Amino acid sequence: MRRYVVFIFTALLGLYAASAQADKAAAPSASIQKHAIPQRGTLYRATHGGNISYLFGTIHVGQTAFYPLEPQVTRALSDAEKLVIEVDIGDTEAMRLAIMRHGIYPDGQTINRHLSADGSAQLRQALQRVGIPFESVARMKPWMVANLLLIQEMERNGFPTEQGIEKYFISLAQKQNKPIQELETADYQLSLFDSMNDAEQEEYLKENLAELANGKAMKKALALIAAWQNADAQALEDALLEMQKGETASDRFLQQVLLDQRNPNMANKVEALLKTDKTSFVAVGALHLLGDKGVPQLLRQRGYQVQKIY
Image 1 (spheres, rainbow, N blue to C red):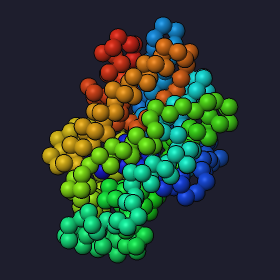
Image 2 (image 1 turned 90 degrees about the horizontal axis):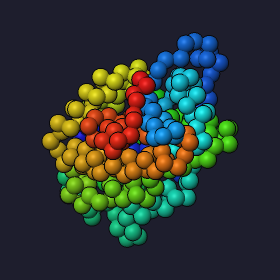
Image 3 (image 1 turned 90 degrees about the vertical axis):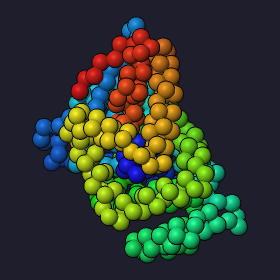
Image 4 (image 1 turned 180 degrees about the horizontal axis):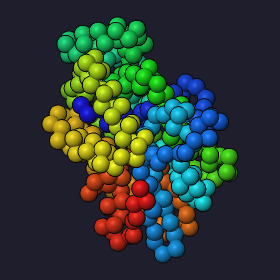
Protein backbone atom coordinates (compact mmCIF):
# COMPACT_ATOMS: atom_id res chain seq x y z
CA MET A 1 0.00 0.00 0.00
CA ARG A 2 1.41 3.35 -0.96
CA ARG A 3 1.87 5.48 2.11
CA TYR A 4 0.68 8.62 0.36
CA VAL A 5 -2.74 8.26 1.97
CA VAL A 6 -1.09 9.78 5.01
CA PHE A 7 -0.85 13.08 3.16
CA ILE A 8 -4.02 13.09 1.13
CA PHE A 9 -6.59 12.51 3.78
CA THR A 10 -6.92 15.48 6.10
CA ALA A 11 -9.71 14.12 8.20
CA LEU A 12 -7.94 10.94 9.15
CA LEU A 13 -4.78 12.73 10.14
CA GLY A 14 -6.54 15.33 12.24
CA LEU A 15 -9.51 13.34 13.40
CA TYR A 16 -8.34 11.66 16.57
CA ALA A 17 -6.14 14.55 17.60
CA ALA A 18 -8.97 17.01 17.02
CA SER A 19 -11.44 14.92 18.96
CA ALA A 20 -9.10 14.34 21.88
CA GLN A 21 -7.39 17.68 22.35
CA ALA A 22 -7.74 21.39 21.71
CA ASP A 23 -6.24 22.80 18.53
CA LYS A 24 -2.65 23.94 18.83
CA ALA A 25 -1.66 26.09 15.88
CA ALA A 26 1.99 25.78 14.93
CA ALA A 27 3.86 28.83 16.13
CA PRO A 28 6.89 29.98 14.11
CA SER A 29 9.98 30.46 16.26
CA ALA A 30 11.96 33.68 16.25
CA SER A 31 15.11 31.88 15.08
CA ILE A 32 13.34 30.53 12.01
CA GLN A 33 12.05 33.93 11.00
CA LYS A 34 15.57 35.35 10.88
CA HIS A 35 16.52 33.11 7.94
CA ALA A 36 15.36 33.02 4.35
CA ILE A 37 12.05 31.20 4.08
CA PRO A 38 12.11 28.41 1.48
CA GLN A 39 9.32 27.53 -0.89
CA ARG A 40 7.24 24.59 0.27
CA GLY A 41 4.46 22.59 -1.36
CA THR A 42 3.05 23.85 -4.64
CA LEU A 43 1.02 26.96 -5.44
CA TYR A 44 -1.37 27.70 -8.34
CA ARG A 45 -3.50 30.70 -9.30
CA ALA A 46 -6.79 30.12 -11.11
CA THR A 47 -8.63 33.08 -12.59
CA HIS A 48 -12.07 33.78 -14.02
CA GLY A 49 -12.85 37.29 -15.11
CA GLY A 50 -11.47 39.39 -12.29
CA ASN A 51 -11.78 36.65 -9.69
CA ILE A 52 -8.83 34.67 -8.31
CA SER A 53 -8.56 31.39 -6.44
CA TYR A 54 -5.17 30.39 -5.07
CA LEU A 55 -4.63 26.63 -4.79
CA PHE A 56 -1.99 25.48 -2.32
CA GLY A 57 -0.88 21.85 -1.94
CA THR A 58 -0.43 20.78 1.66
CA ILE A 59 0.59 17.84 3.76
CA HIS A 60 -1.53 17.15 6.81
CA VAL A 61 1.22 16.75 9.38
CA GLY A 62 3.93 19.19 10.34
CA GLN A 63 6.58 20.44 12.72
CA THR A 64 7.59 23.88 13.96
CA ALA A 65 10.47 24.04 11.45
CA PHE A 66 7.91 24.32 8.64
CA TYR A 67 6.75 27.75 9.78
CA PRO A 68 6.28 30.45 8.79
CA LEU A 69 5.47 29.49 5.22
CA GLU A 70 7.00 31.57 2.48
CA PRO A 71 5.67 35.10 1.80
CA GLN A 72 4.01 34.23 -1.53
CA VAL A 73 1.74 31.81 0.29
CA THR A 74 0.98 33.92 3.34
CA ARG A 75 0.34 36.97 1.12
CA ALA A 76 -2.09 34.97 -0.99
CA LEU A 77 -4.00 33.97 2.13
CA SER A 78 -3.88 37.53 3.46
CA ASP A 79 -5.31 38.85 0.17
CA ALA A 80 -8.09 36.26 0.09
CA GLU A 81 -11.58 36.89 1.37
CA LYS A 82 -11.84 33.39 2.81
CA LEU A 83 -9.87 30.25 3.60
CA VAL A 84 -11.16 27.05 1.99
CA ILE A 85 -9.91 23.67 3.28
CA GLU A 86 -10.86 20.05 2.66
CA VAL A 87 -12.59 19.64 6.02
CA ASP A 88 -12.99 22.03 8.94
CA ILE A 89 -10.92 20.09 11.47
CA GLY A 90 -12.01 22.57 14.13
CA ASP A 91 -15.53 21.13 14.05
CA THR A 92 -14.77 18.36 16.53
CA GLU A 93 -18.41 17.37 16.99
CA ALA A 94 -18.88 16.69 13.28
CA MET A 95 -15.71 14.63 13.30
CA ARG A 96 -16.76 12.69 16.39
CA LEU A 97 -20.07 11.81 14.78
CA ALA A 98 -18.33 10.76 11.55
CA ILE A 99 -15.97 8.50 13.50
CA MET A 100 -18.85 6.89 15.36
CA ARG A 101 -20.82 6.34 12.15
CA HIS A 102 -18.06 5.08 9.87
CA GLY A 103 -15.12 4.02 12.03
CA ILE A 104 -16.68 2.27 15.03
CA TYR A 105 -18.72 -0.95 15.13
CA PRO A 106 -22.13 -0.88 16.87
CA ASP A 107 -22.42 -2.13 20.45
CA GLY A 108 -21.86 -5.84 20.65
CA GLN A 109 -19.59 -6.04 17.60
CA THR A 110 -15.80 -6.18 17.64
CA ILE A 111 -13.12 -6.20 14.98
CA ASN A 112 -12.49 -9.92 15.56
CA ARG A 113 -15.85 -10.74 13.99
CA HIS A 114 -14.78 -9.02 10.78
CA LEU A 115 -11.19 -10.31 10.47
CA SER A 116 -9.85 -13.74 9.62
CA ALA A 117 -7.87 -15.59 12.28
CA ASP A 118 -4.67 -14.59 10.48
CA GLY A 119 -5.69 -10.94 10.25
CA SER A 120 -6.61 -10.85 13.93
CA ALA A 121 -3.29 -12.43 14.90
CA GLN A 122 -1.31 -9.93 12.82
CA LEU A 123 -3.19 -7.05 14.41
CA ARG A 124 -2.53 -8.29 17.94
CA GLN A 125 1.18 -8.65 17.18
CA ALA A 126 1.35 -5.14 15.74
CA LEU A 127 -0.47 -3.65 18.73
CA GLN A 128 1.84 -5.48 21.12
CA ARG A 129 4.90 -4.03 19.34
CA VAL A 130 3.70 -0.45 19.90
CA GLY A 131 2.22 -1.02 23.35
CA ILE A 132 -1.46 -0.52 22.53
CA PRO A 133 -3.93 -2.78 24.35
CA PHE A 134 -6.18 -4.69 21.96
CA GLU A 135 -9.21 -3.66 24.01
CA SER A 136 -8.62 0.00 23.13
CA VAL A 137 -9.20 -0.69 19.40
CA ALA A 138 -11.55 -3.68 19.66
CA ARG A 139 -14.59 -1.78 18.33
CA MET A 140 -12.72 0.11 15.62
CA LYS A 141 -13.06 -0.96 12.01
CA PRO A 142 -9.89 -2.26 10.33
CA TRP A 143 -9.37 0.83 8.16
CA MET A 144 -9.66 3.01 11.27
CA VAL A 145 -7.08 1.00 13.19
CA ALA A 146 -4.68 1.10 10.25
CA ASN A 147 -4.86 4.87 9.99
CA LEU A 148 -4.61 5.36 13.74
CA LEU A 149 -1.37 3.36 13.74
CA LEU A 150 -0.08 5.44 10.82
CA ILE A 151 -0.88 8.65 12.68
CA GLN A 152 0.95 7.47 15.78
CA GLU A 153 3.97 6.39 13.75
CA MET A 154 4.14 9.82 12.14
CA GLU A 155 3.98 11.45 15.56
CA ARG A 156 6.75 9.18 16.89
CA ASN A 157 8.89 10.35 13.99
CA GLY A 158 8.38 14.01 14.79
CA PHE A 159 5.39 14.93 12.63
CA PRO A 160 2.38 15.49 14.89
CA THR A 161 -1.00 16.26 13.37
CA GLU A 162 -1.51 19.23 15.68
CA GLN A 163 1.21 21.04 13.72
CA GLY A 164 -0.31 20.24 10.35
CA ILE A 165 -0.51 22.84 7.61
CA GLU A 166 -4.30 23.18 7.79
CA LYS A 167 -4.17 24.08 11.47
CA TYR A 168 -1.56 26.71 10.68
CA PHE A 169 -3.82 28.21 8.00
CA ILE A 170 -6.83 28.09 10.30
CA SER A 171 -4.87 29.98 12.94
CA LEU A 172 -3.88 32.68 10.44
CA ALA A 173 -7.42 32.97 9.08
CA GLN A 174 -8.85 33.34 12.56
CA LYS A 175 -6.36 36.09 13.38
CA GLN A 176 -7.38 37.86 10.17
CA ASN A 177 -11.11 37.34 10.88
CA LYS A 178 -11.57 35.41 7.64
CA PRO A 179 -14.42 32.94 7.16
CA ILE A 180 -13.41 29.29 6.83
CA GLN A 181 -15.22 27.10 4.32
CA GLU A 182 -14.85 23.35 3.74
CA LEU A 183 -14.86 21.58 0.38
CA GLU A 184 -16.09 18.31 1.87
CA THR A 185 -17.36 17.00 5.19
CA ALA A 186 -15.82 14.61 7.66
CA ASP A 187 -18.80 12.31 7.18
CA TYR A 188 -18.23 12.15 3.43
CA GLN A 189 -14.50 11.53 3.73
CA LEU A 190 -14.86 8.73 6.26
CA SER A 191 -17.72 7.19 4.30
CA LEU A 192 -15.25 6.54 1.48
CA PHE A 193 -13.19 4.28 3.71
CA ASP A 194 -16.30 2.70 5.16
CA SER A 195 -17.38 1.78 1.62
CA MET A 196 -14.78 -1.01 1.63
CA ASN A 197 -16.20 -4.43 2.46
CA ASP A 198 -14.72 -6.66 5.17
CA ALA A 199 -12.27 -8.39 2.83
CA GLU A 200 -11.01 -5.10 1.42
CA GLN A 201 -10.65 -3.59 4.88
CA GLU A 202 -8.65 -6.58 6.08
CA GLU A 203 -6.34 -6.32 3.08
CA TYR A 204 -5.93 -2.60 3.73
CA LEU A 205 -5.10 -3.29 7.38
CA LYS A 206 -2.63 -6.11 6.67
CA GLU A 207 -0.78 -4.11 4.00
CA ASN A 208 -0.41 -1.18 6.39
CA LEU A 209 0.74 -3.41 9.24
CA ALA A 210 3.38 -5.01 7.02
CA GLU A 211 4.82 -1.69 5.84
CA LEU A 212 4.77 -0.22 9.33
CA ALA A 213 6.68 -3.26 10.58
CA ASN A 214 9.35 -3.27 7.85
CA GLY A 215 9.85 0.51 7.82
CA LYS A 216 8.63 1.08 4.28
CA ALA A 217 5.74 3.22 5.50
CA MET A 218 7.96 5.85 7.07
CA LYS A 219 10.55 5.69 4.28
CA LYS A 220 7.90 6.61 1.72
CA ALA A 221 6.29 9.16 4.01
CA LEU A 222 9.55 10.95 4.72
CA ALA A 223 10.43 11.02 1.02
CA LEU A 224 7.15 12.75 0.22
CA ILE A 225 7.58 15.18 3.11
CA ALA A 226 11.04 16.07 1.76
CA ALA A 227 9.57 16.68 -1.70
CA TRP A 228 6.93 18.98 -0.18
CA GLN A 229 9.50 20.80 2.00
CA ASN A 230 11.63 21.60 -1.04
CA ALA A 231 8.77 22.35 -3.45
CA ASP A 232 10.26 19.56 -5.56
CA ALA A 233 7.65 19.31 -8.33
CA GLN A 234 9.39 16.40 -10.05
CA ALA A 235 9.58 14.36 -6.86
CA LEU A 236 5.88 15.02 -6.16
CA GLU A 237 4.96 13.96 -9.70
CA ASP A 238 7.13 10.86 -9.36
CA ALA A 239 5.30 9.98 -6.16
CA LEU A 240 1.98 10.21 -7.97
CA LEU A 241 3.25 8.08 -10.86
CA GLU A 242 4.57 5.42 -8.48
CA MET A 243 1.24 5.32 -6.70
CA GLN A 244 -0.61 4.89 -10.00
CA LYS A 245 1.47 1.80 -10.77
CA GLY A 246 0.27 0.06 -7.62
CA GLU A 247 -1.40 -3.29 -8.19
CA THR A 248 -3.01 -4.03 -4.82
CA ALA A 249 -6.63 -3.39 -3.91
CA SER A 250 -5.47 -0.67 -1.52
CA ASP A 251 -3.51 1.10 -4.26
CA ARG A 252 -6.54 1.03 -6.52
CA PHE A 253 -8.77 2.35 -3.75
CA LEU A 254 -6.40 5.22 -3.11
CA GLN A 255 -6.15 6.19 -6.76
CA GLN A 256 -9.72 5.56 -7.88
CA VAL A 257 -11.61 6.69 -4.78
CA LEU A 258 -9.45 9.02 -2.71
CA LEU A 259 -8.11 10.91 -5.73
CA ASP A 260 -10.01 10.30 -8.98
CA GLN A 261 -13.44 10.31 -7.35
CA ARG A 262 -12.82 13.38 -5.21
CA ASN A 263 -10.86 15.61 -7.60
CA PRO A 264 -13.80 16.44 -9.93
CA ASN A 265 -15.93 17.41 -6.94
CA MET A 266 -13.13 19.61 -5.63
CA ALA A 267 -12.82 21.22 -9.06
CA ASN A 268 -16.59 21.88 -8.98
CA LYS A 269 -16.23 23.70 -5.66
CA VAL A 270 -13.29 25.79 -6.88
CA GLU A 271 -15.23 26.63 -10.04
CA ALA A 272 -18.10 27.88 -7.89
CA LEU A 273 -15.66 30.01 -5.86
CA LEU A 274 -14.28 31.55 -9.04
CA LYS A 275 -17.79 32.60 -10.05
CA THR A 276 -18.78 34.12 -6.71
CA ASP A 277 -15.68 35.25 -4.77
CA LYS A 278 -13.25 38.00 -5.68
CA THR A 279 -10.33 36.15 -4.07
CA SER A 280 -10.17 32.82 -2.24
CA PHE A 281 -7.39 30.65 -0.86
CA VAL A 282 -7.87 26.88 -1.20
CA ALA A 283 -5.62 24.46 0.70
CA VAL A 284 -5.87 20.76 -0.20
CA GLY A 285 -3.54 17.76 -0.10
CA ALA A 286 -0.72 18.25 -2.61
CA LEU A 287 -1.53 15.13 -4.64
CA HIS A 288 -4.95 16.58 -5.51
CA LEU A 289 -3.15 19.24 -7.57
CA LEU A 290 -0.97 16.93 -9.65
CA GLY A 291 -1.32 15.12 -12.95
CA ASP A 292 -3.88 15.02 -15.73
CA LYS A 293 -6.68 14.29 -13.27
CA GLY A 294 -5.61 16.89 -10.72
CA VAL A 295 -7.76 19.89 -9.86
CA PRO A 296 -5.69 22.48 -11.83
CA GLN A 297 -5.82 20.41 -15.02
CA LEU A 298 -9.55 19.75 -14.60
CA LEU A 299 -10.11 23.51 -14.33
CA ARG A 300 -8.02 24.14 -17.46
CA GLN A 301 -10.13 21.60 -19.34
CA ARG A 302 -13.20 23.64 -18.37
CA GLY A 303 -11.69 26.78 -19.86
CA TYR A 304 -10.30 28.47 -16.76
CA GLN A 305 -6.87 30.07 -16.74
CA VAL A 306 -4.61 28.28 -14.26
CA GLN A 307 -1.03 29.36 -13.67
CA LYS A 308 1.48 27.37 -11.66
CA ILE A 309 3.33 29.88 -9.49
CA TYR A 310 5.83 27.29 -8.29
